[in-house]
Image (tube, rainbow, N blue to C red; front, side):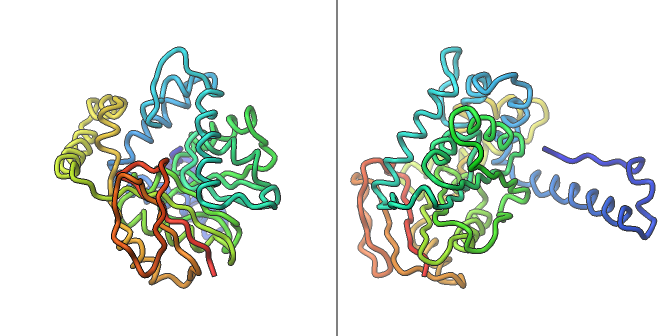
Length: 314
């Protein structure tokens, strides 16, 4: 959602009053936000999907119309319950595999980085005492709340707009678990690492981060340059937004970074927050070299091009 403010709305902006300063700040913040987002071409499919979602009358229609952006099929037979059902299955598969199903889960707080319209958020809200859903698209967050109201426990939900794409308006140490799945790969390299730092910051001592990353594979020799070309094509007026709604184009262009375990480990070492135990989960079909800073475990639910960091904060 973009704030549009004109000079007419701020006729008192030159007046040294609280209203004038506040109005100037709205204009500056909106201008800065629009310029910042414009440089992130990999976010065009998400912004396009957000606008499309605002035109739909029901959550079922949202799922049917913007399935391309969630790596999901589109079609008249899809509905919200089916969509979130896949999220429910994955939630407990991952939490079980990562040893994060605590006996006191019902009193814990989970921060979800990249909630979308709530595919996993609804399930999280049924399991955790509090869920803080974060996303860069305000329209998605509105739909996320509707999803949780229908299929989860909305009284446990709080939404946070990640307006700058890299910081979370969440208090230090508020979360028992900071969780992100298939989100960080869509961010700029620096933004992704900033969100890793934010995940560490908002997690309380004794809590855990569970973060999903995409790393380099052999096919990236082709996918990486093609992805860059696709993101350039998305900038073409009229044609770009149309292309961004095509599933193949979104899948090719929206993966804006690759982060290896070494890169993330080096970044973690620079943070003020420290971790007692780090575990890297990877696919059984992909071998990783043994590490001195993390335990390696395999899980069949991990795509060979992905890996997870699960770490306990000191």
